[in-house]
Structures are given as C-alpha cells and as structure tokens.
Image (cartoon, rainbow, N blue to C red; front, side, top):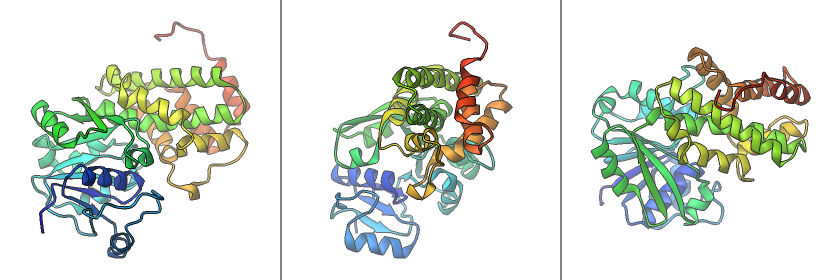
Length: 325
C-alpha cells in the first residue's frame, strides 16, 4: 500500500472536506475516524452525512489508526483537540491545526495546546495553523476559496504552503500563530452577536456597526497577546468574520438568530464552537487586561443574566470616544 502523504484526523464536515480536496488533488490521503466502527461505515458507504451528496473519492482511505504520515491535519471539535493530540505519538510529522476556539479548562489557543502536548514539535517549528473564511460544503464541492497557513519558520511555512495549496484552495502565509488562532476563535463569538442583531430585527446598520466594533476588540486582544492587528485585518480575522457573521450556513450566526428571537441556541443542531469559546475568550482577555465589550455582552446573553434590550442599551450607552480607542 502506498504510504500517505498526509492524514486528516477527524471526520466532521471540515476534516472530510479537506480529505476530499487533497485526495482529488492527487495526494495519498488517509481520513482518520474516532472509532473503528465509524471508519468501517465511511469506508463501505463512501458517504458522510456531514457532507450530504458528496461521495468520498475512491482513492481516499479511511481508518481509525493514525498512520505515519509526514503531515497531519487535525480537525476535531476544538474542545477535543487536547485528547486528539494525545493520540499522536512523538515523531517528525508536521501538525497542522484546523479547528478554532479557546480551551474551556486552560484558556489556551490551539498552538499553545499543541506546544504543551508536543514540545519537540514546537521546538522544531513543526506546528502550523490552517484558518480562514471557509465553509466545509463549499470546499468539498470544489468552489474557489482562500485561507491562511500560519507557521513560525518561514522556510517550513513556504514549503508547507506549496504542498497544501491547490488550484481551488489558495493559501497565504503568516508567521503570526496567535493572531491567526485568535481570529478564528473570536469570530464565532461576534457572529453570535451579529445573529442576535438580525434575529431581533435591528437592521443591517446595527450588524455592520457591531461586526466592525467586534473586529476592533479582537485586534486589541491580538496585540495584547503578542500577535498582530494586521493578521486580524486579513483572511484569518476580517475574512472569517464576514463569512461567519453573514452566512446562513454558520451555526454560530444561527445560534445568535435564536437569541434574537427570544429562544435558546440548540446544540443538537451541531457543535456551536462560540458557546464554549465566548466565556473562555473573555477570561483570556481579562487576564491580558483587554476590554472586549461585545464579547462580554455575548457571554451574559448566553448565560441568561442579561436580556437583549438591556444588552443593546449597554453597548449603545458606553462612553463616547475616538474610534481607535
């Protein structure tokens, strides 16, 4: 059997979409399921209900065992990233983190979790982050898209981009792992707020203002954590936020719509990363001495300690200031 050139760990919509993309591009790809039963089902049916109507390519291998591939793309739900990393034996593989969030227990971003779990990979600059404005079903359908590949070492970063870019999936490099990780996590929280605005019938003006101010507080936190505001102005921040705060396929936006309608978000419809990320992100911001009023409001809305009308009043009556402050 030909050894894989890369393996994708996680059979959700995003992991499956990436595996399909790279199998179509001619890579020898293994898709790694959580259990043997799940792997057997996908291997037999060639169908993943997370991506209805898109068959797994014949060449795509599915297994529950992590193969010795030189590139591992990690696509679990973010709160399971630590346990997924624990499954990976130490070695020379490059670890590409493809999930977004902040860990509830440790308040760490993905690169920080990976560095703690695999210190040798961190020391060798073998940890990367793939993020950007990408809906899985569009990637799987072969629609054109772009993303950011963040990695500290420039030579390794450029080599990895050359391996993972395809004619329909354009990659841009960045050295800013923390800024890229923050952008991907925080956009889910702002998307919940944007959905609440639309669900409550407050209009497009209000959504545009909220998304812009949300982006400003994300940029402030990026700088406070040693990242770059420029990263937040690019695909990893602004691009991802635009998609998630406006696209009807966004589970976080739909969770906000429910709040705006006076309902509670239903996790049974799928994992809503922003629900876990919001309080963890706010705690991380407080630890950094950074004010994030939109994020704080979302946390209170989700906790039920404030109503939507009070939330609007609080944000609109904040002290007046210049925009850059």
